[in-house]
Image (cartoon, rainbow, N blue to C red):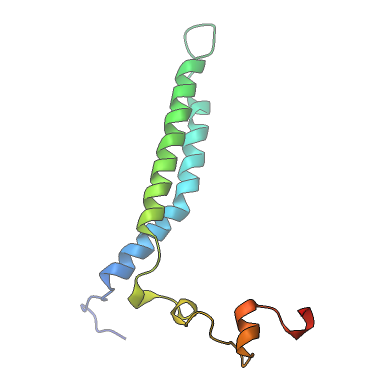
Length: 113
């Protein structure tokens, strides 16, 4: 257990990656809130609804959510090599669990041949 006053060190790269993952998880919640927000707008002083303003607002929110999701997806791309999971670090085509090499490569056991 670290002594009091000693800061807990977290690697900068993994910390930032986790925060980006948190942002990606919260993006749909933010999107749902922003799409539902026009319900709370006060009614217009005119007898007709403000369809044009609402449509422009929804289209803008939609476009911004797509841009934010694309930015997060790009920044959260493949894990850096030093943080790659064990499964990805294995050689491709290597037999798993003692299976013969040809069965591991094509994914079918002897019963499918």
